[in-house]
Image (cartoon, rainbow, N blue to C red; front, side, top):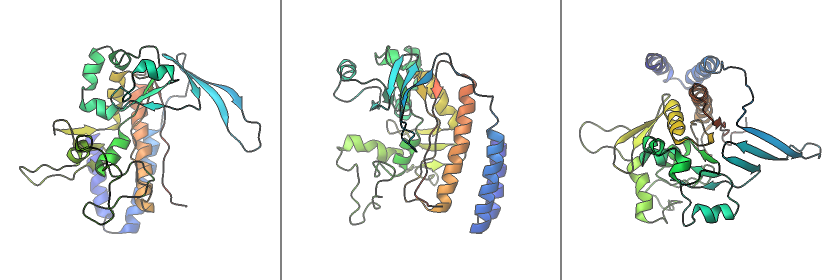
Length: 296
């Protein structure tokens, strides 16, 4: 719990002055936490969710396949295109038109729905399927990991792996999202902003072992996202497929922080899975796989 995290921070402060000691400490800490976090019950098939393989490539060395996901709200052909409806709606297209065009699975962003209207409001309305009028088709929600990445860089990186935009004020530092009108960009500015009143403010977006803290772009209040809280929010939303929290690094992240980020993602995903297994409902959790460009 919290006392464990405090002890870990104290140990880390002893090693922070020497890079080699710090790297060794991080590896040992990751191994210990991973051992403690990955003791899970044996996997068993779910009667409400499964993936059917329809065709597998016979070409030597190929793992290509065609399949079908069976979810509580319908099937999804794989591979397939998943449409993003950030706040539960696809911009400029209603659900009937999107479904007619072949939209089988729709993606919604947990963090944005957390800011407004809030998971409790959606749950009180009968869950996200009923809330947005998509009761006979499957939904998937994310954990908020990418939004934390985007907020931390004020929306300047459209996708991880894109060339890094330069810091504000430097020549050639045009934002990858700067062409958006002000209201669309305002959320990145507010989420990354520090308080201007009272004691010295905290960093704009704080990421720790416990989770990530940032400001709501709607009303400016501080919000905290942890592996456990994002799963609880996704339980309230009620999507068919939910995602564990991850710590997303940029493509050009150096080897040491990249290693630390991937290790943190393993721990966060283990904590997310443990929270999910405590209250499965009719939902499946998909893992997140990411990394960087380090060639080791």
